[in-house]
Structures are given as C-alpha cells and as structure tokens.
Image (tube, rainbow, N blue to C red; front, side, top):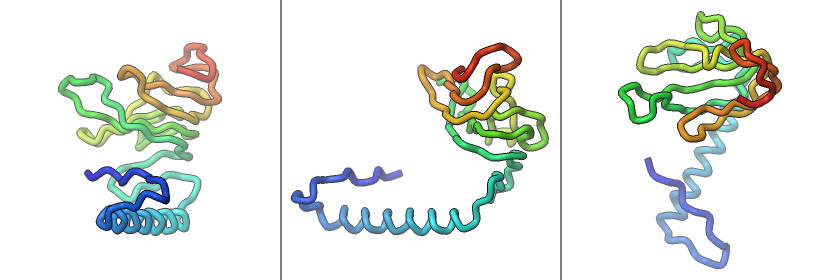
Amino acid sequence: MDELPAMQHPSVPMPRSSTVRAVLVAALQTSLVVGVAAQCSNAWVSPLPIPGVSGYVNVVKQWDPDGAGPSGPVWVVGGGFTIAGTQSIQNLAAWNPATSTWSAVGGGVNGEVKALTVHFNRIVVGGSFTSCGGNPIPYLV
C-alpha cells in the first residue's frame, strides 16, 4: 500500500504526480467520512459478514498476540458492550479473521474501554474500568 505524501511547507512545490495523488486521497477520504457519518449509529453494524458487538466501539487496534509465531494478527476492539458476535464478552474483545471468531481479551473489563495500543507486543488498555478478568486493576491494563 502506498504511503500518503508527506506534508510540505507551502513555499516548497510538490511534484505534480504527488499533488494529484494528494488531492485524490483527500477527496476520497472526505467522501468516505461523509458517507460513513451519515449512516453511523451508536452500535457497530459491520458491512462485512462479521457479527458485531451489542453496544458501541471506541477503538480498534490490530495486534499479533504471538508476535512472529504461527498465528496471525487479530483485531482488538474496545468500547461499551456485553456481547461480541454470540459471545458474552465485556467491553474488550478480539476478532480473529483466520477463524472468524470473537474471544475475550484478558477476561474483559468491567467498564468502558477508551484507548488501545501495542507496546513490546503487549496490548495496553485504558479506560474507565476498575478490574480486568476479575482482578482489581483500575483504568490501565
């Protein structure tokens, strides 16, 4: 996938092909945002044949739990929900595209997930929760 062109100072002219590409990318992004915003609700309704979650999703992050191991990456979602697919999962779940299944991450958390990142191949979760997997761990796991 091509990288987006770097922003340049206005006094430095961009090559013509980069300018055209930048304009097309910006137009496409704007049209996608407008189209999506008009259809959004507070629940995740997937346009793909992927069962969604029962509430809302604040953040999505790709993560490969076994690093360079044989398993592929999963998509971790965090928000405010109690069901992912057909599983009872609290607010933090992983979608595995290889198996088309949802699973709990860390046993789920008891409050809203607001942030996800990966640090040294570990998922880091932030939000307004006080426990993860039944263990008292407030706000950051």
